[in-house]
Amino acid sequence: MTTTCFTRPAFKSRVVPVIVIKDPAHAVPLAHALLEGGIDVMEITLRSGAALQAIEAVARAVPEMHTGAGTVTRAAEVQQVIDAGAGFALSPGCTDGVFEAVRSARLPFIPGVMTPGEVMRWRDEGFSLMKLFPALQAGGLGMLQALGAPLPDVRFCPTGGVSPANLRDFLRLPNVAMAGGSWLTPADALANGDWTRITALAREAIELSNKP
Ligand code: 3PG
Image (cartoon, rainbow, N blue to C red):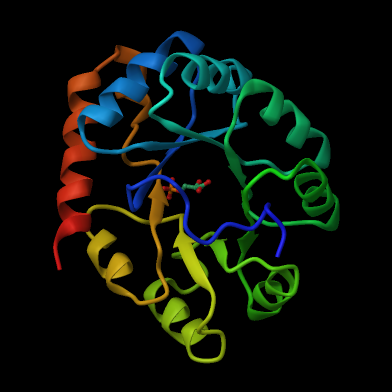
């Protein structure tokens, strides 16, 4: 196993906000709002021009937040997110190029998968924590249960279609380590700087994730 494969991330939260930040000035107050609600991890996606600046701002100003880079789909982006200060990265899928880049940089990484063959491909490289994306479209709870039978040594972070309505069902599965989604950071709440609402969403998610 390489240091790029991590099975037990350092963050405590089993809920991972998938974030699109348009204004880098929102990054630090957002990090504080999530921490206030009990979430100590952010997946800041490379889906906006502000993403790298946002990662940098949180990594520098909020050290207790575990700052991950999401939507890392090209090998060249790996060094960019490391330079910005990301502590780990996730991808919606994984290519040989992205894998080689995270391995040589020793960046902790959660590869995205959607089929048993992809799970087997990245398990061969030492990964035992993967992102199931898009989780609902891939079959949701039933898909995860089905994957767990032949591939019980792999755990997942389902993302895509996760919401407060199904979060507990996902987290109750034995092969689900954590779940991610964009519902925690709605675009209008970010645009309006409505940090109270984001803290409330985070708190609700943490309460759901703590329920047996
Ligand atoms: C992701 O990149 O993980 C997804 O776009 C998040 O999906 P959601 O918007 O359905 O939560």
